Image (cartoon, rainbow, N blue to C red; front, side, top):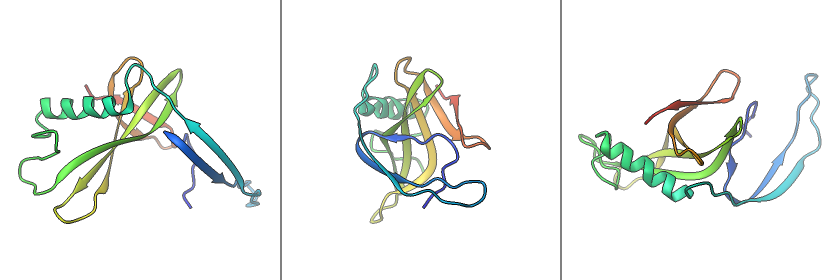
Length: 139
């Protein structure tokens, strides 16, 4: 499975995490399983955060409409908020971008946005060389 060396966005809703730790000597721990429910809502809901992003992208001309159409492409973009991440005292709704060609499954583009759940700022998000989230003001 994927190696996580930085903060992990926590899925919204009911989740089960199973993980192992690996020491510097290459020794693995036993599998630990944790069940939890994340039902977090700041000044907006996750769906409202996605709608805010889409409206901003339309306003900036990056999208033509709420269906994710863009000039020159036959497919469309879509956005999904399924997790939260924290940095300092802030909690962010993490929004993943997907692109779908006609007749195909949606594929993640690797572009991630975040909405500050309290201040409602919109950020483009990536990870730094240490695996920590970097939030760059988008709008």
